[in-house]
Length: 445
Ligand code: ADP
Image (spheres, rainbow, N blue to C red):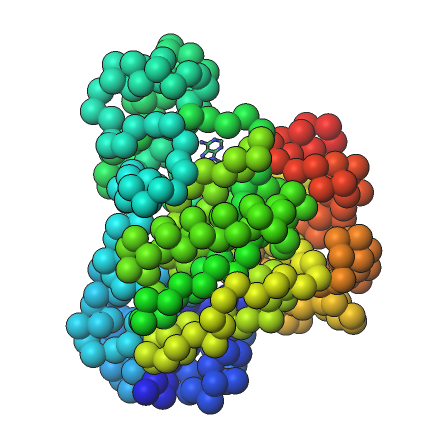
């Protein structure tokens, strides 16, 4: 049995995990960098350990220090959150080798899904639809050009080891592709240490729709419905919602079955997300994220399942509390609030001098903000997730306007004004979404 959980993360997700542990009656250990001494997760955890200097490489990514912190405090389990070491199979292995419980999927599943070309091949072999493309990484430019001619332009090159939107390049013709091939390989090598790239058909107006899954050690995999995450800027999600305005019960079932098949193909356990592109009524596997995701709360609100509590159950060898896909009830939408200039998106770290948090019917706020908190410049700019719930999409839109307009943060710039503008957009209100939405929205400002 787990008694004490070390949370290998910071910010709102560290606070979210502490909340689940407290509910489950488990003690918590926060780790933090020198820049995060005053962070909320440090204050809320039962114990805390400083693990190094501000730069993540020397603290939140420092495996040796994190394991030492677990040993010093007698923690018996590690929750990695998202980002940082959450999809690092080696970290998961080290945690397990040290006799600690890893609150996440098996290292082998992380490794396999972490190589996108291999992931694509593996799930395709189980009948999960993928876009036409290269099964193996491409060796030469000419190989890429030949394949692109056979599947038709436009195509997208992606880093096999990729993530966070890095190492992706779209090409509309052979000339562009030759050029993109070298840049994508170079970018992949620099960002991930591996130059491998593969190619697939590029969809011009797709929706990003993903399926949340949860799996236990007994081979049970349950799909928990979809989240639509088409509102993105530079491949980074800004707004997510569940259910998707375009997914019918039949499609939900088909996508859920495909996602479960993908999870089973790698012996998955814990919470994970299978991402699909959706266009003209068809869905195609993109990748699997082998961790809890930023946008997990929207699924929690429409299914009633606490995903972090489920992760804790699975890690302790218990069975899932849900045995089949629940009927989705109501509608939920998450707005990612970043400490950024809402016009230029330049980061805006600094001290929060005044703070009024929204509440009231249908509002959940996952945040690590407090008045007087000094947002350090070293990490991700996400400072709060406003999640709004209602009986249908229209009610959610009304509640979102109310909650965003009553969310006051002073001392720094935030993306709250951007979200309020998106809420006024005709296409957004009508649910006419695609991953190109923000390009259109920003160019028409
Ligand atoms: P990452 O792991 O770097 O986030 P993904 O493979 O998840 O990369 O893709 C991120 C985003 O890139 C998607 O949400 C989508 O907007 C866009 N994208 C990826 N592949 C395609 C494709 N074949 N056609 C069109 N857009 C794509």
